[in-house]
Image (cartoon, rainbow, N blue to C red; front, side, top):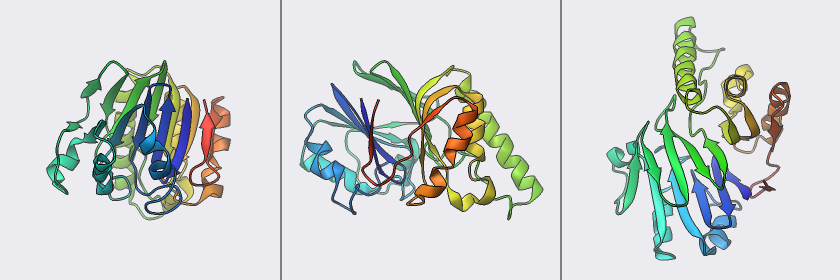
Length: 239
C-alpha cells in the first residue's frame, strides 16, 4: 500500500485493487497539476473520492469534473455538502455520522467532527485507516474564555470516546495539527493517540508549516507510534 500526501488535508491511498483520494483541495504541484491529475486519475484500479465536509480547504468542486476523464468513480461525501447545494450532484453517496458505506473492496464508517461534517474510518486491505477531517480539539487558549475552552474539551472528548468505543486500534491515522491554534496545536493529536492505540500517525491541516508538523514526533514517541511527516507536497510512504 502506498500513501501520498497531496496537500493540506488531502491524501491518496493506493492498493493493488483500489485508489482512494480524500479531501482534495489542490493538487501536489499547483492548483491543477500534480500526482492526482498526472497519475492517480489514470490508475486503472477502482477509484473512490471521499470528502469529509464542505469547507473550501477540504472540498474542491473541481473533483466532479474528473468524471470527464473516467466514469467509474465512486464519490462518498459528507451529508453537509448535499444540504449546502454548492454544485450539481449526480450519483454521489452522501453519508452522515454513524452511517456506513460498504462494498466488496472496502468499508467506510462515518464518525463525528468537532467542526463541520464527519471523519472517516476505512477498513481496506486488512488495515484500519482513519482520516479525521476537521475532528480536533479546536480552541485557542490565548483567545478563548474558560467556558469556551471547557465546551471545546467536552465536545472533543465525546467524539473521541464514541470513536474509541468501536475502534480498539488504528493502523494509519491522518490528523490535524494546525499551528494557528497557538501553543496547544498538538493537544488534540496527543489526546487522540492517548485514547486510541495507533501504529502510524500522519499530520495534516498544516499548510506548508512542515517544521511545525514535525513536532508530532515528540507526541507520538510517548505512545510508541510511528510517524510520517511529509517533507513536501506529493511526498509518499510505502506501508
